[in-house]
Image 1: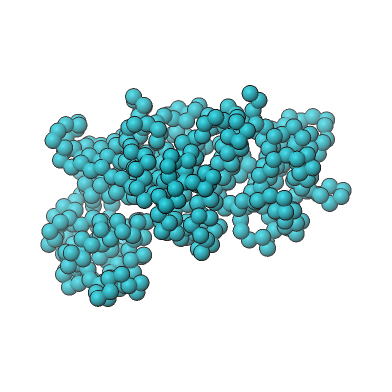
Image 2 (image 1 turned 180 degrees about the horizontal axis):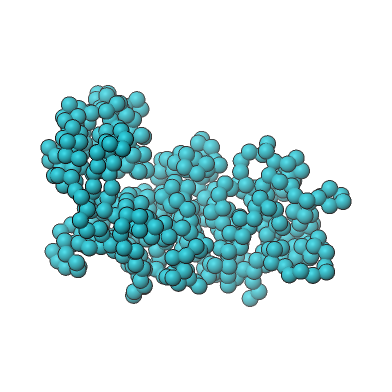
Length: 500
């Protein structure tokens, strides 16, 4: 079977990063590499053939034209037309299938001729907007999967883009979609407005397949994701020794969306490792530091949940031992990748790109392709040994070593005058509530996206302990509700500062 020939619109300096990243992804993904052939004008060797003839010849040969438009119009020929414009017109005249992607939402900053080109394209077909390179790559990926299915080049669909069997829109929590939209706009300048209907948000993220949610949609925004994906859970265990042995002192199985599982698993680990608390000599807030940087814990768990093989019958496992943290991820390295290559700069080839993109937009993932190296650097800065990665029996196993001799406050983990230990986030929430604070601000401190779980796991225990109180106790769900310290809460903070 002949590969799908893809022509990516010709050279524009402002889009060099996006074009090269798209080419790298398509060549790095095992399925795309097998079934697609990408043409970039930069790859053409020097010859005596005129450039404009060459790229128009390639448009004629292609099966699919991918136009990426930004602000600049580019070099103009004797008739005042740019190569990009010529390509699009030629593809249109020849009846080629076209995909058009426009960078940014503000058209007023564009060259007038680029505005006209975008309008011309919009008269023929649907244009898609993007902000980041990652968003462009994800959107093109989803479109190519659909096109190859329609042309029967692919007779199967990548897991996260496959429609979830028997799932309907009623199986999605649209409030979660709306909360995601707000976080994505604040976090990564997501181009859709806050009043965008949830179904339009899902469509923009390529999470619907013929109007039905795909697996990525269920995992990101499902009411009960495990109803459709039984093994999409995270098992967390804490062992006091160096090996897995019974009885297990602490064991939890977390279900829910990928956001909820990451939050819960991260809190499990952070609640059981040592925490150092300083004093106020360096600033207003009391500094804290976990023996394993919490960014490292989060990155390890996010990587496992986002990049795992969801067709496997195994689950993600997070195991804390006396000397190390191990995160077991069902799956394998991408094609042509080695463990050694992960330590060096490399392209991002997510196993589940439709899941990875919303995690990036909400800042669960900082930058695609840099997570492992950032983890190594943070461990080195914290005085920890370099993490280790190994592949064993279909599992990708990450080992992060714990620090010995970390200073602790006394008593351990903020258990001062309370019935139960306070997490570092709860201490920071108490500090924030010296002045009346809204729940949204407190959720940001705890790095939580799910309001219900934040109430149950973080906020309500502080209310039950009598450390916080509502400013409008007769109307607990009032939109004007705020939280403040009680006298007991102020006393606890004073004791913590005394022991710092």
